[in-house]
Each structure stands twice: as structure tokens, then as C-alpha cells.
Length: 235
Image 1 (cartoon, rainbow, N blue to C red):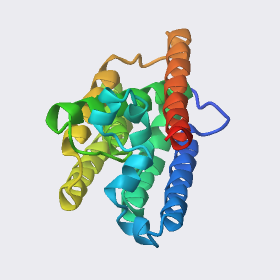
Image 2: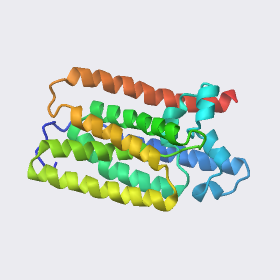
Image 3: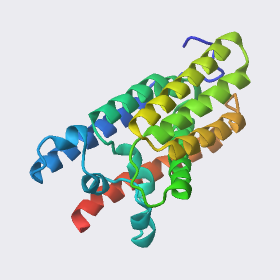
Image 4: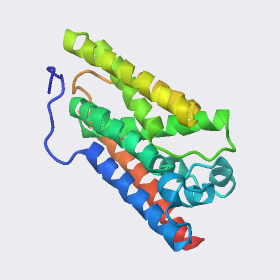
């Protein structure tokens, strides 16, 4: 740790790294499905929309009319090409491991899941008929959270990290403009993260509450992925 965090570093499995592994596995599974469907290597760089929807993209007409609410989670594990995946996983590794080390696994799991939801709900308000994929809503949530959280800590090292998060946000936003990303979702994720960053206790004085929240949000993540997998066998 580069600054004296109010939270102790908890040994054990890294959730940020686990999320990266899941994202990478699903990406290569998408490539395999594309090969079996005769798409060749096109899904590596530019997967077609129907394949993205098959792999869990958020598409609100399906989520609402067919009850596929698991898409509110699964979309955050699906990526539109290896460049999209690579950029998002780089941010998740750099920012996610940092934030997880500061706040612990339960709070991190809550933060990641809640901001995935606030991002997709913002997308629904802005473009409900556009399929959306990618972890960037949650990543903007992590960045927004960290910027506010470090600002609240106030010590010089924390302020430096706050400024680093603002730089990440600017870079990610510009990248999103270049690739035509879902900036409504980015904004929704960032706002969700900022709210949590403002209200989350700076110390472990409500650990039982946050452990429960982490467990509930872990179940939501698992349900989203299980909903995606089950859809492959039901269709």
C-alpha cells in the first residue's frame, strides 16, 4: 500500500483478478462459438450484434419483454472485440486492485455490482433499444468512487490518487468517444460510484452490514452469469 489506508489489507483471492479471468474466459468462449457458427475470426475484433446478444449483451426489449433481467449483469462481462476487452481489463487491473486493496472484498463487490446496474439503467434512459456490452460502466464506477473516497481521506498521498483517478476518467472518456462507447452508461456508473464514495464509511465501523451487502451483490453477479449460461440451453 502506498498510503496508510483506514482499511487493513485482507489476504486471499483478489476479486478484481477473478473478474478479469471471467471476462477473458467469456471472450474466448465467444470466439469459439463464432468459429462454430462459421464466423471465422471476425469476433476477435468486431463481433456481430447477434453474437453479442447471444453472449449476454444488455438489450432492454429482451430484458423487459422476455424477462431476461440477468442481462443487467451479464452485459458487463461481454466485450466487443479484443481491443475493447484489453482496455477494460487494463483499467480493472490498475484501478480495481487498488480500490479493492483499500476497501476490502465485500465493499468492492458491492461497488462493482451496483455501478454495473446504475450504468445500465442510465443506458435505458438514454438509448433503450441499443445493445450494450462491456465492463466500462463498473470501471467508471470504480474511478468515480475512488476520486471521491480519496478526496474524503484528505491526506496528501490520497489527494495524489484522487488526481490520478481524474486523469483515468478523462482518458477513459476520450477513449470512449473515439470508439463510440456508451457514454450514458459511463456517466451512470461514475455517478453511482461517486455516491457510494461519499457515503461509504472511511473505517470498518459497519463491517457486518457491508459483508451482507457484499454477499447479496455476489449472488446478483452469479445469478447474472448463470442466467446467461442457462439461456444457451433453453433457446
